[in-house]
Image 1 (cartoon, rainbow, N blue to C red):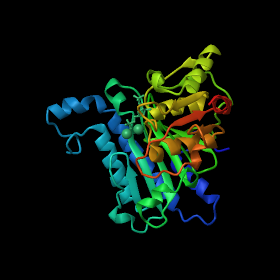
Image 2: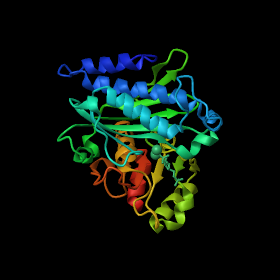
Image 3: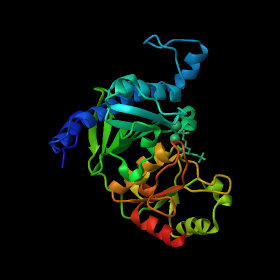
Image 4: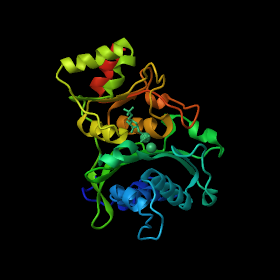
Length: 319
Ligand code: AHG
Ligand code: MN
Ligand code: MN
């Protein structure tokens, strides 16, 4: 078990050493994400000032114009990941089509990300995040992003909350690192995360319940009647982070209006699915294991139910 407090860079390199054939490319890819996360985290702290500075037509200390946080995060990721040379292509929630960075021509990987998840929570000072999912580059076309959740090489998220935490997996353990802002290092704080077998919390936007299938309404009613409590932050990453640590269920189901739910398969649902499953939980679209999903479009939406084994088993029985 790696020691608590280990710096993320060292952790990445020590993991790499376990694979004698590794070229170091994945390690460099992960470190580029780490750098982008630090840049976004520091700007998140300025979020409340963006409008004030923006209105005053101010420039920031680096002499750049002050931007909205989601645009800023998107550009930071595209620039930093693009310049790392490790990624042949990038797909972002904020871009209609994949971006092929000039410096990524020899990149072995492709990456999909939601640069800023929970945008509506920014102005009310509630946790926001960044999620990512890495695949091998195959043909170098948009199709490479549609390989399916079980082909993910690595996945993770960064949550900008009361502290900034970086959680990722390369397909074995799930580990979490907390940013020590005084030295600018992510330090191992949550080694080998295991989701509880059963929790006490359900997390779903119940204002949509009128449009749910009756069986689904009954399922959530049954949780209420068996002592569950409700929590919904409205930032998927924050709701998944809590579910990972405390157990229970998080869902964004389909409803009458949104036949495929709301969340995007490629850069929201599939990376969360891999993390939850590698931590010993389960994730499904209501019919099959979420990692069996092969998106048909980079911005496709799918329903998601994820969490502790106990809740997902009972959900599957109920549906
Ligand atoms: P984004 O900010 O990237 O557009 O994502 C927002 C998503 C997700 O974070 C959250 O779980 C969901 O929207 C909340 O949607 P509702 O307001 O419909 O519950
Ligand atoms: Mn999002
Ligand atoms: Mn977003």
